[in-house]
Image (tube, rainbow, N blue to C red; front, side, top):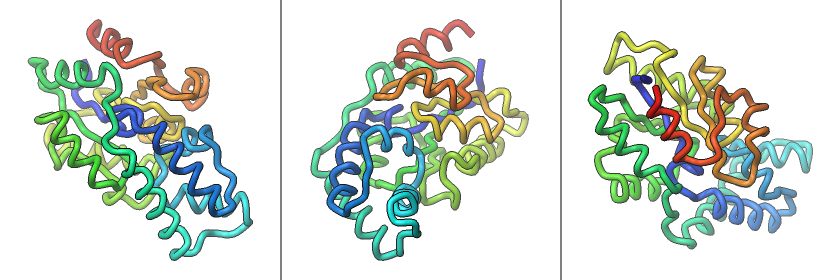
Length: 226
């Protein structure tokens, strides 16, 4: 059995990606930057600044200036928040509390490119007792976002502090996006990819996922056999 689990947030814990995609697509269009819902899913895991900068490079051949990306990201964040609280991904509550109650007591981490405090607060409300604040790695905690391995390497380092005998082979990353899978594999970790969005399982396999699953109950069933 794995001894530590690292969960992405958007599209893994919260079913928030459809709203993120709509908000990104709307705001980017207003600024004359081509950006589709599929682009959003493919770019998921990057920090907001990185997403905007990449879009500027593709569309305008230059980096976004600080005042530009900050204004765009603020507008996107406001639009996202206007939709209210995102629901949980079907099956994630059962999986998380099953892990939490296992006699082996595996560590449970959140590793996300998000910096939205409202979602972190909602985690404590809808999933009490699951994600301790010290077990969260967010956009505020690292310099290089996914697909760079830094977010998951930080999570692994934190998990090692609590369990010095922990090895990378004892860790399972749960992702839904290609960049997150690439980040996990670059960090040397097992990547379980759950296809909760508009991409295909082939997209996730091509990113390097060790196993792909059509939904969260399928992942739960797999872990229960280990």
